[in-house]
Length: 244
Length: 54
Image (cartoon, rainbow over all chains, first blue to last red; front, side):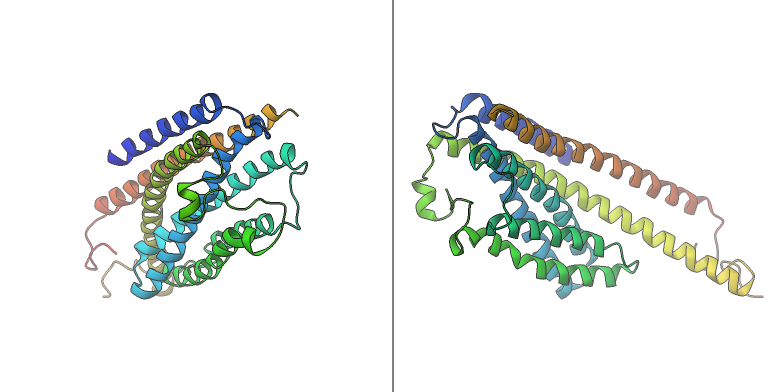
């Protein structure tokens, strides 16, 4: 019930934030209406970082505690993170075409490392399908999730470390947080969208975690069923029956 | 395409994607819960065995 309330709150917050960003905040003097894309693009990218950060931390926790609930959290983070990374890339492309004149440029470090991040966590999700043993799957996934997380700071600092098409951070340091280089209304729209996406993200994480736990139980039941069937085939009698 | 077209494309895909994922997730969860319940019901309906139902 509480999760449902969270979902409804997230939905209303996203509608409100989208309305604010699209109809209340004025268009940018230089970029025009295309600037409005930033609110969903940047918020998606930050939520993607958060998701993959959770995946890495939960994976580390799994390797330490061997608790499959942590693996379910890691899976939830990866799936939701992949979706938000794809949204960030899509939003960036839709903004890049009218402002930069191109949808994509492979020479840009931020764009390329973000594409790599998406590929790494897609690989993470595919890797999970290779093993039926939950413990082995969780261990492999945790290691891949941790290795892939190395790309998160590379994506974030790529605009500082290397020169490219992508602009530097508008808000990134405590100094810029207090004195952002964008007008306050633009920052408010961005933070509003970030808050709304965080609510939706929390809802997705809880639901995906619940789904992972149920899927694991069903999988476990299937495994027990297969063992029983194998016993029946080997001994020629139902496994449940006592040996006479 | 005009700037507005790109804005619509960006918001449409992202917000639409969020909505589709939410609906898909709820549906997947419902199907999984039903399957889990069915398994539990079948297990309860099965005759008791010396190995405790396994």
